[in-house]
Image 1: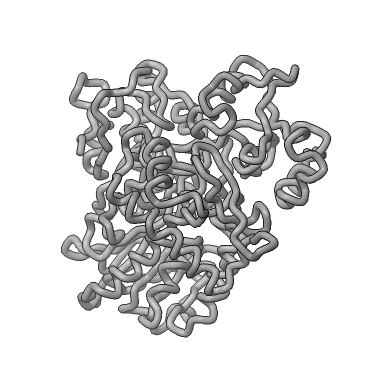
Image 2: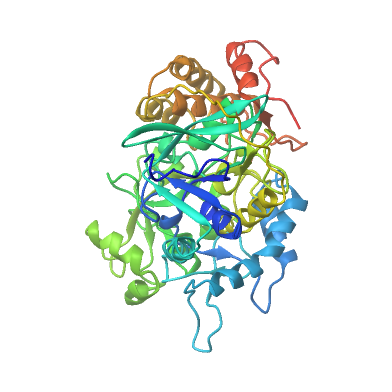
Length: 515
């Protein structure tokens, strides 16, 4: 590892090899940059698992205003309309740029982009690749471009452990690999580390997605936003696998329905039915499961023998589980899928800490609000990855400190926090359960052990959820079922979280600061 990092000091460092991290590295060219990733490019993270596609208003009957309206409706009052418009307006150009670097998007017989439909979209605007393997194709194309770019140094098998700070600004990054640890001296770090799904027993995310970037940023003093909002995808393939395989929303977009074992279509009377926003569908599925009923996704009439042609990857996943979706309904359940909260960033991806940027799922840009609109995440990763690159390139970096000591923490392990977070921060929450989560997670988070960072992330999520005494989007509190008249975003630092955790039992003192 030391040899691989030789000569890398004083360069910007990007942490994460998913779509956002790869885009940021690529768009920094020709400025030298270091990209570190814990696994070989394309072998880990949530990006390669993404099925549905990228939402962009490229159809003849579509425009950015319509895309924005759908996004704001799904976000349930918490989107930043200015930032959302900016990102979505840039989406079509992002598709063009990705195609230019070699992304093989699906096209119709005339060579036009094939467009799919997903929940809560009013138009067909989902650009996809290999039917249902869009993330895999994006990572392939971006990784190939990054590897071919002489200004990017890719260092695989290395994990970030701590940001090193000096006078309130980033001075380095403590990293660990098979041969030990070292400090990369740098004044510019961009985090693209993904989400928090690994904190839940049922998730579509890999085990590496436990919120590492949130822990790094929080310990460095950065502000975090909207941590209580976790999107549970309503249709993960039920089973014992970890992570659970996703059954893309695009399957419902092609007409598949949700039924119980006796054939009852329980969403028929819900506005939008199977294409209602994800939080609505997830709660409906959870209610059936909680009542002891098994839930299935039925594509037999809608797709039948054409299922494998339209969704080859999902058909393969079903076959591995002994299911033929052309002739059998698919057993499903909700699973933690996407984190709408993250590191608070401005329009260029800068955090509240000097020298620290964030993009992708780890960042809170204001696009997703309380409930992400399907297929907006990959677009956000590419668009905001580019803006982070432009911001870093346009920022005069101060020379990193000569001496940046740091103590190496142990490799993080989310197992101890997982049972607590799964029990108390699931599809439905309540105040007593959230307080129990804070009580159980606090000692783990204060420890020096492997559970510390995952537990710290779970603790901050629970504190934020306690402060939001309403139900909105993906955050549903059974003890606070109403939606507040005034929508507010939540914001806290690690110091805030500790103060609130210590006083959670006191009346209104335990409130997350409103912005």
